[in-house]
Picture 1 (cartoon, rainbow, N blue to C red):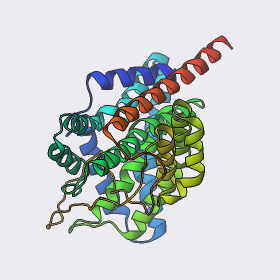
Picture 2 (cartoon, rainbow, N blue to C red):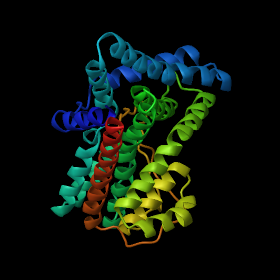
Picture 3 (cartoon, one colour):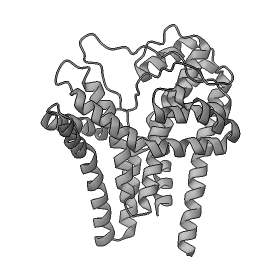
Length: 330
């Protein structure tokens, strides 16, 4: 029933997305703070204990509720629980309003507003960006946001759903990404910084969790885009990006829509008192030594990216529908 759970969750999220300041994200921040405060003693093994409590415990809780509902109330209630878990762990609307505002501003020729919205979204200094670099950064941030908020969650949910652990996969992916980013953010504050050991553990665990989904997303982009160019760019240019997983996705995107990605990073903007607010959909500033081949980023590429992402969603749903049908007929 994973197909129907994903379909309903996506539809509900489109109609009524989570608010920007919602109780779910507030609860996650509180949980991550409590775990780091009580288990972070500065040693690597303490870091792994903290990560297990922060990530694996909620994942196990999600699948425990799933199986309890399946056994005690029946499969319809288990499907409803999967829909609820997916609703809070995936969704375009958690970041797409920024992309839409920037695209509309660029279409209207209002580059100042577009720079301001990009700066607000990622907390970077975009005041002096030329037009092509502005579009390039928007493409990179948007593609990675789509992967982390949609395709990565779908990948782990779908893989583990085959074994009856779908909700655990969605929570595992979302919490792995969240704590790695949140604990790094906390290390910049003046009160209760997170140790380097815990940050390292969270980053390593996140890289391992995202390894397979990143390559599934890259393959999907290649299939629905320009396949040969995407695969060639993946093979020959992914290593130019410092993050292996992000590099695979961005290189495949570059080839799929023929756009040049990579280059100088934007400078993050931090408040002087260390109290920079944390955004649940933000990412680290992206910077790479070299660029991929392709055309210089233009406004038309933003529409190409939207098409690429939605075609990938359709591909996911068609594959899941075929697998569901085969299972029902078999």
